[in-house]
Length: 214
Image (tube, rainbow, N blue to C red; front, side, top):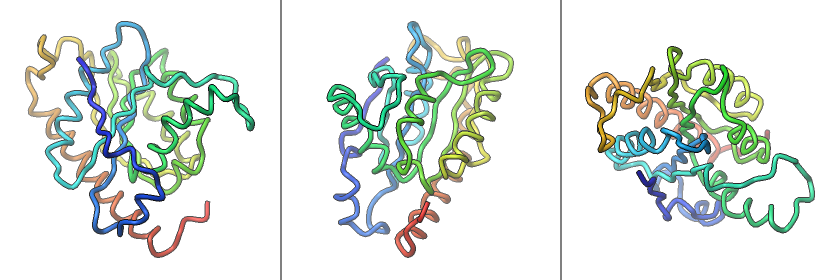
């Protein structure tokens, strides 16, 4: 399945600042963490984005790390090629009011591609809420989520409690990507989005009065 990226979310932070915060939808960046060959992530991402799209006050931008090739060698003076990649993704992270990280669990942790994206950025994460949609085997990806809470705390972000977790998701969706028994998952997604929206409004409003100092 293809993941749709909403181009309207790719507005620079400067353009966003021209519109009063209370007068525009919340920008939510959904970060798809897996870049693994044969990954299941697109199925879950499409499912979650369809739930988020039901909220009229959200402008969703899907950032798929399978298409973001950042080097693992960090640099304060990156090459022109790396600058070009950063130019594709950094403004979208900066423009976001909130994040949802969609992650699998690899060996009791989260993918290296996600840690690399986090480490290449700083202020883009500051004073913004982060929600999680995870999947995996028996743990449903929750061990990856608990580690990410520590990482995002260091990035001055606020992780929310409500989480969507899929335990063994491969048999839960049909060939069209539809959840076979969606009641519990839909309820969890609604709770996550409601809490994420509250925090996003609260933090955005606070920063409009008093910029976050970091």
